[in-house]
Image (cartoon, rainbow, N blue to C red; front, side, top):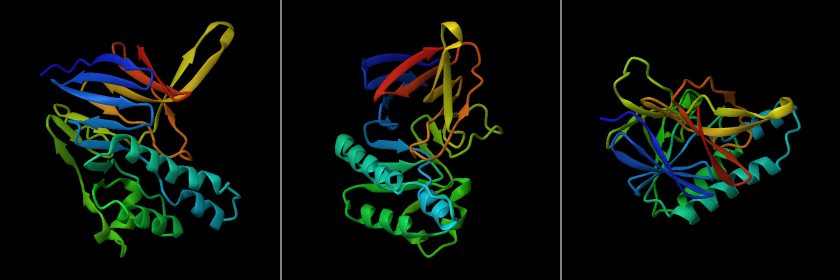
Length: 225
């Protein structure tokens, strides 16, 4: 099965990727569509704003509201049958943001919500909330294995993961540069950008022949390395 990724820009806000013999849709709203039935986002880190405020760090509450507005826009735009959270849906101890999320989720019974458990979700799996959303260690969709964190013990699998919050830096003349979140294809791995606004990121060390799709100004920017 071909591990090379072929990108086709459908519009400024959508790119079709041909990878592992199937098509994926990359969107400017940090989401990935698989087989038209699955919409995937990664690393929301719900509760992080409230966690920092509880510990005396004055993070603007507007960031919290913006996260829910992003989710609203996403489901209105794509109308997914299945919405997959690719790990780190939650950030820390249960707090009021968790309640807001489950209230938001329960208002949308037409959507099947799935959590692929990430390292920050361990508190969730041992909480009273754990029965309120389907949670799995991994998810197989066609040729793709969805995990929160890349599994280096399974190099033959076509893996889609989050966790690293990938970013790409583009350098221009006169030492100018711009940094942006990105989707990143590396042979048999696709790394998704963090959906959460308050998450930071890690600049990728791209291998020759790999491909990235940057996200900036509500547009997608395909890049070859």
